[in-house]
Amino acid sequence: MRVLVIGGTGFIGRHLVARLVKAGHAVNVPTRRYQNGRDLLVFPALNLLDADVHDDRALEGLISEADAVINLAGILHSRPGKPYGPDFARVHVELPRRIAATCRKLGVRRLLHVSALGASANGASGYQRSKAAGEAAIWEEFQSYPDGACTIFRPSVVFGPDDNFMNRFARLARWLPIIPLACSKSRLQPVYVGDVADAISQALVNSLTHGRVYTLAGFADYTLAELVELAAKWSGHPRRILPLPMFLGRMQAFVFECMPGEPIMSRDNLDSLKVDNISDESMAPELRIVAKSLESIAPAYLAPKRKSLGRA
Image: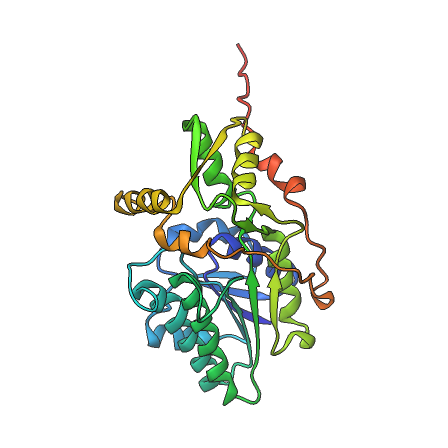
C-alpha cells in the first residue's frame, strides 16, 4: 500500500514509519525542513519529500499518489486566541479539514488521524478545543464520502526514548535542586510510543477499525508530581517537588512563554492539566496491543550515559 504520513518526521512519526516500511508499505513523508528527516532515509521504500502540506496544490499532489493518508501533525503551543489560537487553528483544524476534503475529492478512501485524549469542544484549553474541532472537521467531510473509511486515535501523553516529556523533566532535574510544579496532582496515563505506532499500523489494514475512535492510554496512571519525581530519579538526579498554586504556576508559565524557544510550560498547557488525562478503557482487541508500562521502558533511556574510557 502507498501510504502518505503527514508529520512523519516527528516523534510518533519516526516510530510509525519504521513499522510501516517493515510491513511492506511504500511510504511518502513530506517535510518543509528536509534535514529534520534525514535519519529516515535509512529505510527502504521511503521517500522523503520537500513539500509544504499547508499549500493546497502541494497537498493535492501528495494525496494523489497515496492509497491511504495518516495525519500526525500536531503542536503543543499557539499564540492566544478564541476559541483557540491561530496556530492551533492552522495545524489542528484547517489542515485535517483540507486533508479530509482532498481525500474525498481524489477518491482516497483511507484516512487515519491522531487527535488527543481530552479533546473536547468544551475543553479547558485551546489545545483540547482545537483537537476536537479537527475531529469534527474530518467527520463532516467524510459524512458526504460514503466510500471513505476514517479512524481517529486519542493518545494520552506519549513517552519513549526521544520523547519531549520525561526527558524534559529529567533535564530540569539536572539543573534544579527543587522542581516547582503547578497542577502537581493532575493525573496522566502515559502511553508508550511503540504501542501508539503499532496501533496505527494495525488499524491501517483492519476494516474493523473503520469509522472508529480509539483511546490510547498506558498501563497505569500517575500524578504529574509522581512522573516528575520518577524522571528525576531514573536520570540519576532525585529531586523534591514543590507544588505551586495555580496563580503562581500561571505566572511561571507566562515567564516561560516570554523566553526564546519553545516554552517548558505554557498557560494553555496548564489549562489542559485542569482535567485528568486518563481513561478506564483498555486497548481495543482489534488493535492487538498490550500496553507497556512506564517502568519497563523509561529507566533505560533516562539513565545517565556512562562515558567510555579510551585507551591510554
